[in-house]
Length: 439
Image 1: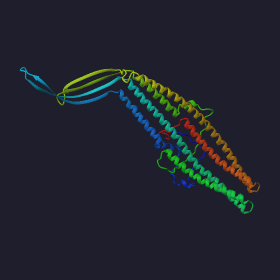
Image 2: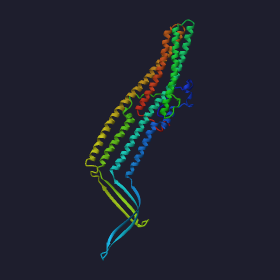
Image 3: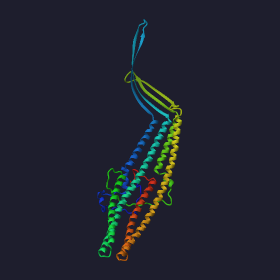
């Protein structure tokens, strides 16, 4: 399913013909879902984290071999020769040689019925697997943030071209009008030069907007996991859903924070280390069963079998204080991991609150800039008519035009800030990119 919701109140019409840099872009612009699906398949950061997780999943499964029966087949051949001195009744001595050969074939099965160390090893392997599961969520969270920002940056870079083209056209109309008035003697040379300079600035801003598109294309190529640069184009509309009001459940959101999950897994791993230390103090009980044949021929015929039960206790096998200090060290590591979890939770809560506040503020600012832009557009229309009719001076009129142009740019920047803040909010809330994202 899509990771993010798309609505239609922010317009991002993709007009590919308006800038030459777009000529190399793919014929089919990519949607947000296309980018998510591509990143899930190709982003190297996410794929590397998933491969490492699968590595530890395999190690976890392998750890069960310690509690399963161990079966071995053996086939051996032994040849020996010995000599001894034999003394006869008449006092004479002779050397007698004994040669023997033994063939043995057998099957041996052993099973530890009670082995706390092996069970502790399984729990340790499981804890490591859980930690790398959480690391995948961290990677997916980071990849989603990068992808979100790159996709929005390209959408806005394309929209920036449209806005700068509108501004250039506005100054072109104004420059032509002032040039005519200057030619007719009703406008000063300085006013004409100023308008031409404003037109030049608008044209160069449009050129720079084209460069911004190229930069955003490179960032998106990297975010989706492409090794080589591709001049990508994106399409779609973007809507930021309202920030949770009045207050979201920060504690509930915190439990989905990948950094918190990683630290929880580290606490679990530290607990398993304590259990492993205690396992040094418990005995191991196992059974061993052997069955086979032996004899003097290559295919032995004499059957044999043995059953052995053993109880092993590692009494100071690694030193008198070994187990004590291993347990103490593991407990200290567990206490440290728990304290670090407190730090991570506190930092995560602070990040959530800050991201939520910034998101709500950015939404308010978009509303303000939209209202200012609408008012500036209306003033520009009115003052242009009055200026053409000679009721306002050039200085009065040009201030209105500059204000309108500035508000167009400010509104675009406010929308960009809103998307950036939405990305930070979703990142703080723990949203992530997975293999099925975008489906």
